[in-house]
Length: 256
Image (cartoon, rainbow, N blue to C red; front, side, top):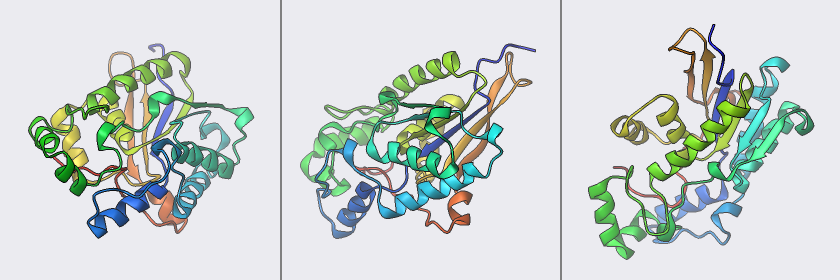
């Protein structure tokens, strides 16, 4: 039997609905060019619904046998992600002192640079040349001034996976991040290419507090591997009566 290099389970979760998601929807519906958010993106809190979603997620984890619950929690330092992780663990009855809990800046939201807070209308009007460039290059490789491409995000997530395989072997790891983080982890763990991950992205947004998970299978591959188990799983929300939301994180940009 090969030596296990991976955790027993990895759950990747998008944060609960945030006040930024709500503000973005309002701006898009009104045809505005700028999303009305007074705080920094890092400080945007959960909405009341987002708290309900995080609580529902926590109940789902709490119903698991103790030996199957998360033993390591890694989250984005952004308020909406950290609050989701903290509220879910508290609701599940998991004591912070009994697990490893780390806010890791490598799990932060994709940085949008000068496009931050702009709606798709605002991007087209204010930076038509960037809109044209993005359409030509594609979102996987396009890097807005001061921001990141998907490739940039994937690079830092490769480093996260190195840390996980080195420090959290055989553990049960919960990762709480953002929509692009979820998709980029899928790209890495499922060994996708640009075409496939962009098809996934075009098909649907990642629901808030949905669960995508991987279980270690020692019989797969040369040395065992992580195998997909759940993809954008929202049953915990529905069972708890929490509304399922799929708003993109801000700023919004056209699918391509």
